Length: 357
Ligand SMILES: *Cc1c(COP(=O)(O)O)cnc(C)c1O
Image (cartoon, rainbow, N blue to C red; front, side, top):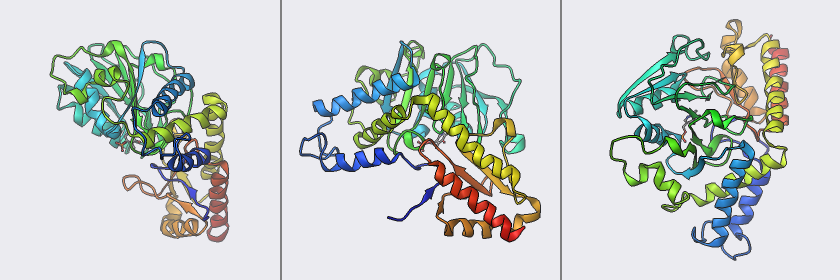
């Protein structure tokens, strides 16, 4: 089989054992003689997977009492509206740190007053705003912990005077999180915890039921809490692979261990970006993401960008083109990205420097 060094931003590389388990289950799910995509979602075999997956979420993240874990459809983008619809009565605040944050804010505006409390738009979202005040009259304050496109990350769980809501699509399960500091955490699975098709929501139950608007059944978190995420047919295959991905995280020692691996992996690449005279990072050093590493060619070598892209591609690098709003390169180095892939990219940058600088 062809070897690819997969740096795609999402969907992206998944743990090999999770993919292998998915292949097995597609053939025969738990000895039922049926594929996992053929069995009833009301069967005891399937319900056991749902329960195991919820339990792993709670165990790995250390989710306290009072919170529910939901598996929904619609992606993180659907949560932009869910959050506002279920929580926004008068006013919500958003930290504007990139395209995803802006999209979340735009949806909220349809449900009430929603404002950007601080923004890093002035420098193309290359840093995380600091020193801003969060008004105490907000229904909630929304942050995007990892800005997938710009490679910036909020690496600490902030203290917040109001309900804190976080889009953790691209850094969930990459580090330990103090869930008790958040009222709601959500994200699409397809960056660190599984394939596309399932959306995770961790919600503190007591924040719900406070808005006066009508909530359609499917768009009311309480529906999915009551029915254990089985109000309608859940995305069974995606949940199956998510469950296997969580088992892999647990087998690797949990989030402390995974975080250490992520720090080591990211440092490997950032060190090369800082050392190599042909490249430079685009994100403020203090806010550099451990998940999405953005870099460009320095002024002197700007004309070599395409050449490097071709050079890297020839050596098996996949998905390193930067998002069009940043340009240059982006290597997404999620949990399952092997250190060998990062070493291969670093080698590639060193070789290219030898030949061109
Ligand atoms: C990818 C991404 C999204 C969008 O997720 P979908 O599941 O495709 O809707 C939202 N927020 C962040 C931070 C992302 O990285």
